[in-house]
Amino acid sequence: MFNNKILKVMPYILGVLILILVAVMIITKFGDSKPGQETEMKTDKVVSDLVGEDEAQKDTVNDPSEGTAASPVQDDDGAGLGLIPDKGTPETDPDGTDKPTGDTASTEGSEPETVTEPAPTATPTPVPEELVFEDKDDYIETKNDVNLRVGPSTDTDIVTNLKTGKRLKRTGYNEKWTRIIYEEKECYIYTPLVTGVFEEPSEDGNATGGKSSGTATLSTGVGTSNGHIVCIDPGHQTNGNNDKEPLGPGSSEMKAKVSSGTSGNTTGHPEYKLNLTVSLKLRDELIARGYTVVMTREINDVNLSNAERAKIAADAGAQAFIRIHANSSTDTSVNGVETICMTSDNKYNADLYTSSRKLSDAVLNNVVSNTGAKKRYVWETDTMTGINWAEGPVTILEMGYMSNKDEEEKLLDDDYQNKIVIGIANGIDEFFK
Ligand SMILES: [Zn+2]
Image (cartoon, rainbow, N blue to C red; front, top):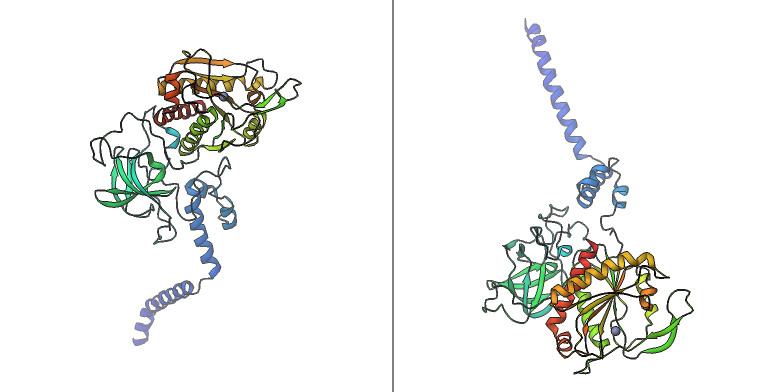
């Protein structure tokens, strides 16, 4: 009987023993996993964090080296102006929380794409980056719908979300983050979401409310790269150069390399200085809108012929070559804006006529609508060396007449210059649409 009992219970005892054995094997297996396996698992995790879902899914082989090669920092245009995400930080998250909706006047190109908070990264407790801030004591205005944060990082807490654009006191600037005061607290906003800089709080004296006055304010900071390259050529230079150069590639017709331009009838202010002043503002505005900008000159005392300027644009691969000039006439009543491009019969680059005409129309229309100046016309001519040597869409903007007293005064006014600049930038945005 006793033996029979043991026989009956035996299967249960065996079952329990097998379970214990299996459990021991599982525990041993985990405690003894090979370092290689763990590394591979971690690498896969990092790769999928970096390349985003779509690409991680395509990567069926799960080979870490291949994953790393699909570098997330690669820029479409290779221009390098785009904000390159730090490894492990989805830095493309600027702090805008909403995309612009149906506002045709807004600067679409500069609005960041990413709208959500960053996904958790591989590092559980990220340390905010060490950033150097330039001291500031002025005011900025924000885009609509931006986050104010306690620190200069998207990993820090949000103080508040501003649903409308606000004017705020600025105490520090860095190309990535701007330090501001909100309700007596120090906060940070992503710099590309700053739309303008002001000397004063808004008109009602309230630094966190009110609309901006009728003045034109330029964008600041560096926008997310939009993949377009623009070359700006501030016309003329301190001293003209009367040496000759061919009017176009292969031409036997020769023309002076570059003249010193006109000057204001009343003030004597030279055109080359005005052209540079406006061009530098345009450079900053376009960079803030995400363009890669190449300048033919950033100082007045250079020696650059018109053909050489066109060469700079061509070498940069500029998709728009914007040449900034001001006009003059012996008839002091003449005023208004015009742009210039080649004719459709141009001997050197007639293939650029359609695009150059489109660029010329876009810039002309937008400068006129933004300044209220008189619209003249697009002048089509094959007599401009810097146009004939162009290898991409080109326009000359004649901003107005320095020979006309009223227009000269406007052209030398800081705020009117800003209106011109915003007009040009809007025209370029339209051209690339
Ligand atoms: Zn000129």
